Length: 221
Length: 346
Ligand SMILES: [Fe+2]
Ligand SMILES: [Fe+2]
Image (cartoon, rainbow over all chains, first blue to last red; front, side, top):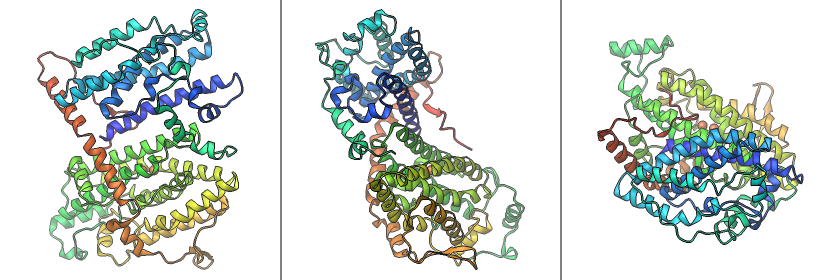
């Protein structure tokens, strides 16, 4: 429906805006622009969560991916908003106001589809089951993160596992969905998105996204 | 235009003496520039024509999202990507405003969408052309949104209140779109030889279809005359087209691009540009469904609609459960309603 088209684009625009702020800040370290970082790195250089590179699938797949991420994102940003790095704190505080709305929206959809029809319930459960194995690495701090967590700069993602799961449980309860049993989590062995070891999807996404700047490397757009 | 060749259902325009008293009163209101509002009495033909026109316009906004959406994933910078996403989202908002305006005339959105999918209602011919390069995105903003503004600014004064008000909001956004499109073209034309060639190629392909957007000459058309009498069409197709050419040619010159028309020349006497013959057979073929992308566009719309069916059913089932649930509590709002870009107009 048209309203959803508009609402999901709002989320996309917010996230893109946030990504640009983070990239711009990161790029200050070695003088690379946001576009240099986005368009001229290989998939192995990307450090995103595996969850967010999973395909759109059907609407339940899209919503499951979005909700599981949003629920984590909102907790991480709340922590980062008190970061000792003032730039990080400022970006996180701005992003947090947007992401509170994202999680509100995506959790409503999880509930609506979970507690909608038999068909939607089945699809929502299947989507969640399929993505669950990508939620483990969200809560594992990488060796590069630990010193930053200790310095009060980065969020302690391991401490966020408990509140994240509590929120997920309560949303799933209202949605009449079963929280999947924990089994093997992708990336738990230290070879996941945070280490640049991705699923097959990312390089396809990047190939499409980067095609113009890579084809015309000196062009300005 | 976005609504091309709208039929009025009349065979000729009545003179005042032939009108029934209520028709005469209605025409007097229109002549006095009093807006017609949804609850006012109006002749059936006026209502039907407006439904057709607004609906075509709404469908054009929605189908128009497809050729531009085609480049969102490939936009060449993050800022261009954000601008394009927001633009395509604006077009969804325009569709929504217009569906709402049409609904005030007693036709449901589902009905209108069903008619589009059944091929009973048209959308603008222009969206049946493909977007082949990034320069097409610039060209669409510059020419297609530019042509839309040309057509829609007069409609801000049209006789039907909800339509006129929708047009006012839409025109503000369209002028942003046009500027953004022109900005893409400027970057390309100031860029490398390859980028400039990309821009010229896009102009070559979009120029004539853009001129066709205004529709065939209609000075002799009884439908256009009736629509003009009702003040739901304020300028003829040729007048609008001429304005568009006069505005756009200097912009092309500024960009250093050549308009692909050997007969294009400034006419000192008329104060307008003369331009070549439009190939109306191409236009009619595209309207009949033979454009390069008609099939793809409709397939895409229908696919999106059908794939959303189970989601709409689930949302309705959930809302019903909640409405019948004994415990109190607000119905969860469908997010998107009342959203920052989605407020409907009435
Ligand atoms: Fe529009
Ligand atoms: Fe537009």
